[in-house]
Length: 183
Image (cartoon, rainbow, N blue to C red; front, side, top):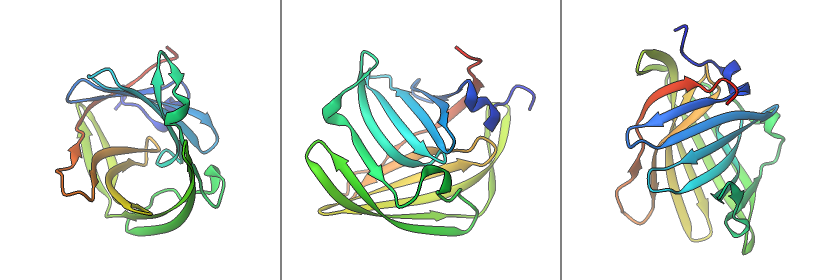
């Protein structure tokens, strides 16, 4: 695993490639916070700030490298990012979150359920993985995510996303990880 990224590599960046050619880049922002820049094949680019590499503290669209102000959604958890629970096998965390978007403030209830520790391999890199089922509920909406949390990287990877409208979930398949090396 000499060439396989570790959590320490978040300092300079970890690049994840998905099966459709999309790329996600993860970098440490500050203790407890990781920035994710996602560049999708259709040209869409997004920026997420993740507490403990998992919990969405802020998300926004990017155009020409700049945040689109009307797209920004922030989440105020009842603790700092450093104090958010790091996913552990066979645990649950329920939390009420104060949210803000361009239309104002609202509340959201989140449930994070983490399953049994298993293994996952990307190219030649094998990692411990904790599968997660995350539910987000607010006034008039619900959506669901499946996350693969990789303790060695300190990152939660979004592997599926679904809404409560009955449409099939969006599925994301990760194929490779690499250290960015201060690019």
